[in-house]
Image (cartoon, helix red, strand yellow):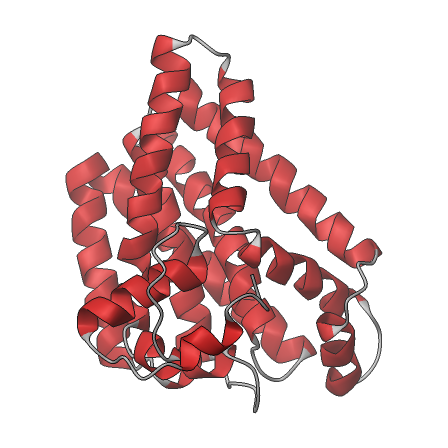
Length: 262
């Protein structure tokens, strides 16, 4: 995904529709075949949670079909659902999670950590972090499907990008790579508007329990941002990708906590 049609993302198409379609094409495997410039997509970074919400709707339909019609066990259904989320995004964010895991585990200067994060090797840190995030996420989805909180799937997937936005708004960008544009073009006003809309949508879907899903996603992003600052002194595209996967975990966890306690 990183190399295929790479030059297409620098075509001079700057309409809002083109930017939205380009962002969908950039972040998923959906065959939209409409590309635009990185800068045009970055200008609508604040809309990314709602694009992920569309993926969440697909996840809602899949999970509902598996559990209610095929009568699959919730654990199997959650594993399939998690695999779907990884696959439809072209494993793009998973790649960031793996690289992030290697980067934060290695000892040395921020420059050395960034170099390790950007190399093509997959180390113990990568596999360890993926195992931790993956197994906990599947367990969370299993509980959510057991409680039949199907609408939570939409909120969780939307909140993955609230995690990403939180990293983007609170981090210093790297000097190269596509990730820097998404950080540079997001401002506090756009972040607050996106968050307010996300909270409103989540409340309509699942009342206060849904709101906690957005809060969890934001907290996940804040944790990734702090780790990024501590280890790298800045955020790269890999850090943004890692925040997506970690945000999913925290969003689902907070929804479960709210559902049980409220």
